[in-house]
Every structure is written in C-alpha cells, then in structure tokens.
Length: 211
Image 1 (tube, rainbow, N blue to C red):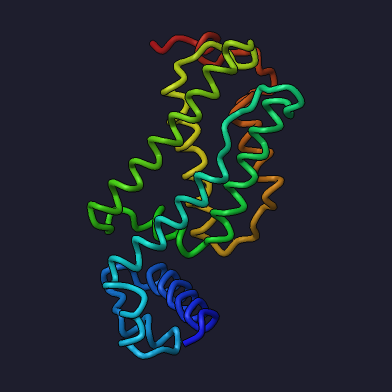
Image 2 (tube, rainbow, N blue to C red):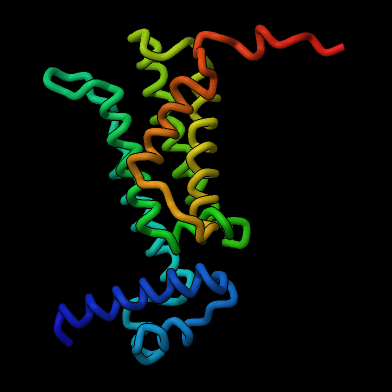
C-alpha cells in the first residue's frame, strides 16, 4: 500500500471519528461505525489504531498541539510587534482553529464530562499550561503599566472561562456566526475595558449599598 493511500485512509478515519463522536458521543460510537463511514474494512482500522481510545487520544493530542502552537509567548525583543498586537494574533489563531475544528470542539466543550480520566487529565494539564502563559503575560503587562494591578492567576482563569463559554455557545447553535475578526475584537475589548461606557467608573465602588 502506498504512503499516499495510507495517509488518506488514516485521515478519513480521523475525520469520520470526529463527526461520529460529536453527533453520537464517544461511548456510543463503535469502531465498525467509524470504519463504515470512512469506507474501509474494520480490519483496516487496526492498521492505524489499537482501539477507539487510541484513535481519540491521537485526535486530542494533535488538536492540543495545534492549540499550543497557536499561543505564542509575548516577545519584547527589538523589532517585535506591540504586545497588544501579539495578543490579538494569538486570539485570532486560537479562534480560527477551534471554529474550524467544530466537531472536536463540540466534543471537548459539550461532552467533556463523559470522557475518560486520561482525556480529562490531558485537558486539565493543557488548560493549566495556557493559564500559566496568560498569567505570565498579565504579570508582564503590569510591569509595563499596560495592565491594571490585579490577581494575574485569577484573571487568567476568567479569560479562559470567557473564551470557552463563547465558543461553547457558538458551536451549539445554527444562528448566524460572527466573523473571527468581530469575535476577537469583542472578546479583547471585553477583557481590556469591560462593558462600561466609562471604563474608569466602578460598578463595585459606585453602586448603592444594599439595605
């Protein structure tokens, strides 16, 4: 069998598995179903993967690696773009990826609780790595007076949570989708200036006291 045919068969198995997992769930999707959708014999499946868990782990590892590659540390070296421009580029790359990989994003955000402990641990480790990168960026921003004094770790979780929920809702609906540019702009503006017409105002400080 030629290398090109092997690559094509493996790619079809992966794409059909992502669609089947997203529609029917991980546990109810069978190897026979994946092979049938890919147009190959069940025995062919085992030329590429040991079992269904191996297939899913391969898909997840590839996706998380792509996400990690999309998030680049802020570079303050000579000739580097402004930090905010680099943050915009990071966010745009991430949103492009997760919206292109709609089926896999649905699995990870909508059905994460149904996945096995190995997958959950892998996801937790990934989110922890992203949180550390965001925390480092925020701490750097504070040292440059670009970011207000804050609990950088807490804010990193808030940023991840906001992005996850927005993507979750967008991949759950058939309503018209915003462009990646619009999505990036709204998320970035929400993260930098919030929702107040006057960013210097404080709802906490100026709100009337209860009772």
